[in-house]
Image (cartoon, rainbow, N blue to C red; front, side):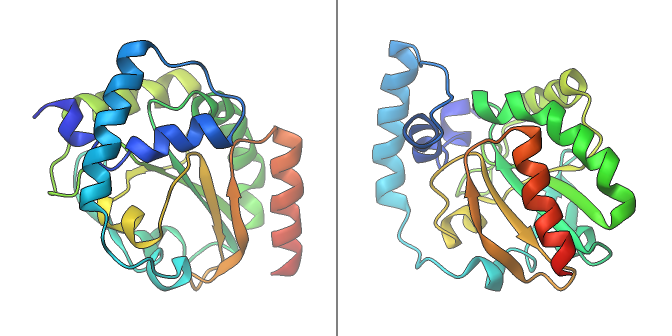
Length: 203
């Protein structure tokens, strides 16, 4: 399977990253051309009604990097607060903040906090999974030293919640209720800790 097919849904994510995060690297001309083509494909495919993230995120079955089915709720139910971080292997701001997120997760884990990373560029709307992107994700895990779980975001989940930018981050309580509004874009370690402490203090 070609990587273009695997990244069917992530075209607007990469454009959104460039437009919304303000910290991304410039794409090459070839990447820009490929992104435009993917955007046109996605515009024809993305017809599902956007649902409330609270209604769908915690209820989804996702894949781990071995492509085993896992219930996202199982990663949420034992935590006071879970940070669901949608990211892409192509996304510079996503990768740059991951070492900080890994350190935050290690410091806050005993306070009832966990991070779950959901890769957005492994699965397409036809249910295909790109093995080379999975290998990229594994290499990123090793390079960044993160220890929090990295799972594969189903394309339909991203369609259901109308995901347009990466990174986009949701915070959920133990019952899967979404806390506050989604956080769009990357943040510094201090900025993330301010958000996390606020939600932990409310639980």
